[in-house]
Length: 360
Picture 1 (cartoon, rainbow, N blue to C red):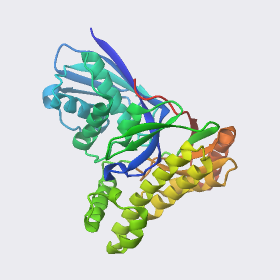
Picture 2: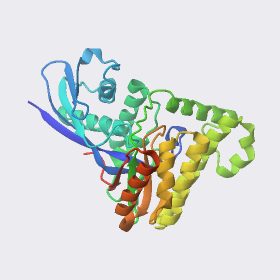
Picture 3: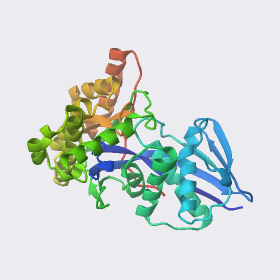
Picture 4: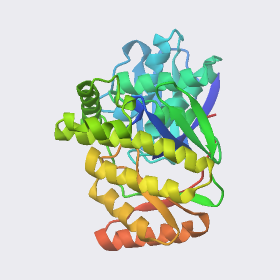
């Protein structure tokens, strides 16, 4: 019986919040936590998926691939099957277990890790190959079309192209992907207050519509086509809500370009200040932060050794990422968790993550 397994990491978005579907630029990194999909071929047309963390099981026929209502977690894997079939790959029946240490809904892109690991598992199981960029795009389509989240390419590309001790720079218009060395002596801390986000339900897709409406009102193909200087001159053409949304995206692109230069120069202080500015824009202009995320960011910024902090991922829940001196990372994690508990009575999971290689 044919057997296979594949692993894909989660990712942390460092800068470039919601810029991907606006044709913009992003900085992110694969992390040392992810998901493994492992299983075997079947001699019928059945798909059997199990989630070890959720203790759930789903069995469906290849002939009846439809988004699941009761077992929504499985849609990320089923969507990949659908896209492979539509791309001309004759997928056969299989059974696979999903396991790992990447919490769903924490803003670390467990969904993309599930998609990428499923795609690589099926390619290996059937003896097929696919170009890395085409693989990331196929997984993005699965999330867009089957799951219903109109996300950009950030999550899947970072999971595929991640490189240890490097940040992934992605230009979502030209599809340029390059890696930039992460300066030594620095660390990334993830803080998860346990408030899961559910991007399928409304807010994410609403922000996408608002961004597209702002671009249309400004007469450009996308907000990527407006510089920060230009926006200062033409932003008043937009009604207040769309002006705030556009200000966030245009500002984020500018911050990514400046941060890429700062990373190349080893300028951690500038990178941290850009992270702080990004969170303020998310909070006020894009309104995709939450009180818990604001609290974590506010505490982190007061701690010795912390250089910058912001929400990571789509927002509306999820986690924060803090840039810190590596020597201070453990004490920052302890103090951040303690102060958050004192302030809210709730427990946040805080951990230091390594920047890891991409999917395999």
